Length: 314
Image (cartoon, rainbow, N blue to C red):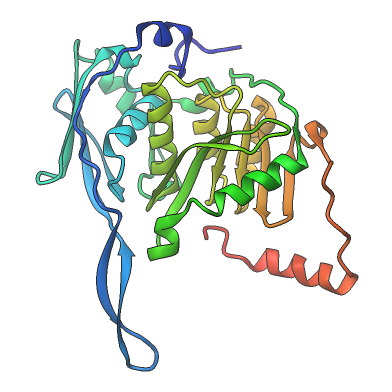
């Protein structure tokens, strides 16, 4: 079941038109070299993550200011507009122009969005790092979505986690960022990482992936979504709008996110790191084909305590 009010990346209509709005190409370098003093009083150089304010204007109407790493500003803008349902379809967008000197991104549509004030009237303050606001009544719309009940194998999870370890370059170099990935995995093949995005906020990274899918007419029904950040209800909403049935995280999950995932059919796998994971929803669809050796009881308790003590936001 698909709600017609929610634009879907990769629908047949979008694929047939293959439309791309005029866009700038204004990605920034993600890390900056700085000097710091360590615990021994020694001066050393290193890298820290960038962070820039980007104010989004839709037909000259100021919408939101996003704090972002700035590596994928056009994709971030597209995904934000999609996930907030502020534009009806990608074909309605004429141009996206990023101007870092002014700290703004201007989105022009062919016909001004008629009900923009009504959409902006209803807003929810969220836990989203880098963003923090959801417009409209997304919850009511999202619960009409039903996602495909895909089956996957434990070995696929492990192969994907191994591939992901090679992706987070900015985090390894500078820290201070979250990562999200659009993935697919066949039973007997190595996973495909279609796009890996790092940003100062996990929701920015998720929106950039949504924008990439929208621009390239990629449907999410056979994809997985991976994030280093915690799984909140807002993250489940974004994944559902992308029509992705599997959500995987190295961090934890909130109760509201789990309730929502159960209603719309998102498979939720959290605390996924190394050989460990917890399936909070959809365990009946997982084939346990790579069960690791049992831990000694003392080590099992230590691992459980270590897992509980981890910082859920990385």
